[in-house]
Length: 98
Image 1 (cartoon, rainbow, N blue to C red):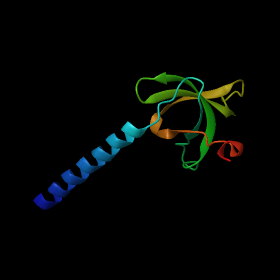
Image 2: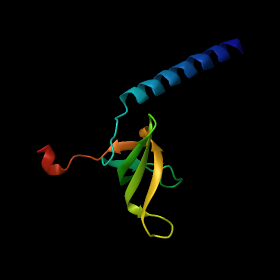
Image 3: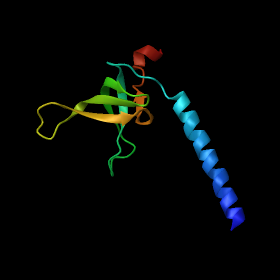
């Protein structure tokens, strides 16, 4: 039992270390940046949606506005809050990479 607890403590510290490193390398976004946001909705996990940064919220959160998703009444683009871990820059356009 003691060996199991020791191993669990070691794994917990390892996970914390990895999470901290992830936060250190997370890109900082600014208002107006074009980004992609990872879906957290069951059935859509792994899909990304184009969005724009509306504003930063604290150190690791952002308010985003989707380009192609609308509010329930379809009157405006949907806005949501995400952690920086769920946001990535848009890939470069093909003509920029050549």
